[in-house]
Amino acid sequence: MTVSQFLTDDDAVSSVLGVVILIVISLTLAAIIGVFVFNSSDEISDEKPDASFEFEFEDDASTPRLTIRHDSGAPVPADQLTVTVDGTNVSLSPGYDYEQSFSGTVETGTTAVVTKESAGPAWDGEAVRVVWTSNAGSETAVLEETTAPTTSATGED
Image (cartoon, rainbow, N blue to C red; front, side):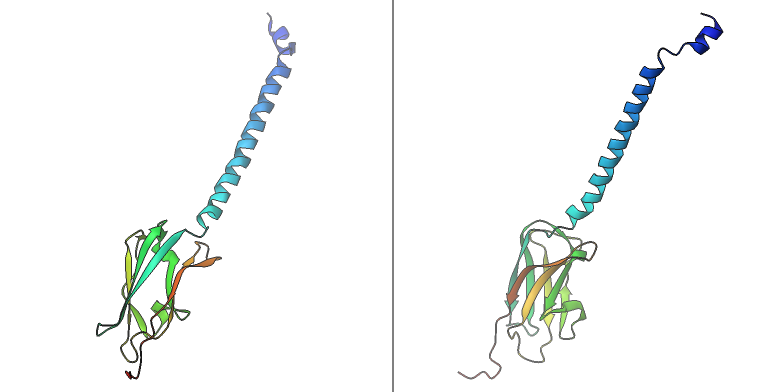
C-alpha cells in the first residue's frame, strides 16, 4: 500500500464515526443520570426522619426538670433538632434552659434535660415539642409533642 492509497482510502471511516457517536451518547447519558442522582440525594436527606421521643417530667426537684429521650427510630443530627416550650426555643426562652442538650447524632437512648426556673409553679401545662428542621431550613416538622402536667399553685385540697 502506498502513501497516496492510504490517504485516499476511507472505507473504515463510517464505522469509526459510529463508534465515536455511540461513546458520546453514552457519556452524555451517564452525565445526565449522574446529575439527577446527585441532585435528588439532597431531597432524600431532607425528608422528615421517623423518630420518636419520650418525656419525663420531674416536679420533686428544687429545679423542675424535663428529660427528653430518643425512644426509637432513625438517628437525627442534633443540629436539626429544636426543643420548644409553648412555641419558643428553649435556648431563647428566659424561663427555661438546657442542663444537658442534644449533641452529635441523636440515637436511641440519647437524652436532653431541660430545667425550669423555680419562680412559679413547677410545671403548668406547657406544650413541649421536639421540632426537626431540614438541612436547607426550608422544612420543619414536629417529631414528638406533649403537654406538661398541671400542678396546683394554691396547694388547696
